[in-house]
Length: 165
Image 1 (tube, rainbow, N blue to C red):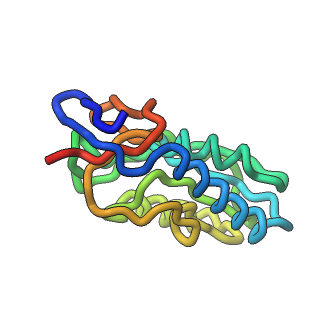
Image 2 (tube, rainbow, N blue to C red):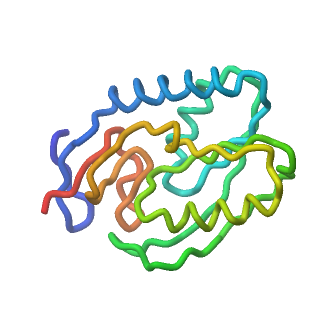
């Protein structure tokens, strides 16, 4: 599908599924190399990162764990400018390497909030699976698919689609 409709908007494919999966495997190989002597905790930021987190975890070759946090800062297609933590971290991370699995970093507001919360818990190291493990650098367009949504819809799409203005 080159073009799709989600709710009241039309989208066109911008990153096909095959390219996404290839890049996830490359990023996973880099993480496997960088953290081969660690037992990292992957911390997936819900809801958008759950598909990426699942694909990434299946590529991990070292002992590791995964947990989830849920942060909210969007309504519709725009940020509210405020971050709410809806589900928090339960695991002990003091002295551990934590890899944050985020879907997309745009304003950085959610990430800044999450990093401040995690740093209080004294982890050994915090890495973000977008920085330095960035899968794609994309324009500041509204996108859906591969876990990303428009008002709850479109997460199930296998490719990433960009809104048609």
